[in-house]
Image (cartoon, rainbow, N blue to C red):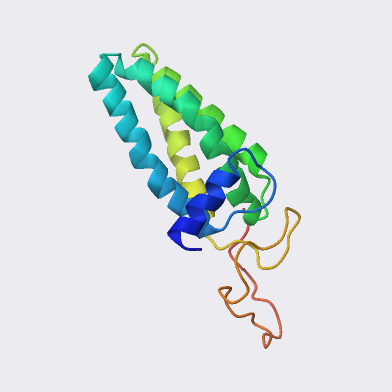
Length: 166
């Protein structure tokens, strides 16, 4: 998908957690969304003089439904249960946000930060990988057939390890 098609598709399906989203649809949305989110958070803090922490919580609560649906659909494209994965990750992110303000519990903050970092790497890996070819249990392949990589029909036996063990 091209940039405009990806953004249009993402915006039309903001509340839809069913189906699949291609890599381009996901990454174009994220590339557009992150600067807008950061600039709005900065503008609200500077213009209205609110606490950065309070603005971060409000912006996070506004972002959650927007990013939740596209994240679920992207994980569905990888044939993963996007709702469970995303709820777990968002729970850890929310705990991280709450404990990041509390300077009293440094030990817990370090553990949560480490877990959050590991989950971030895992999710980044999942988001960058190609979705399953053809239909899966979440719907049809969002990648048009002419853009999909050629199938390996000449392969006699599958490789001993395909790297998809998550």
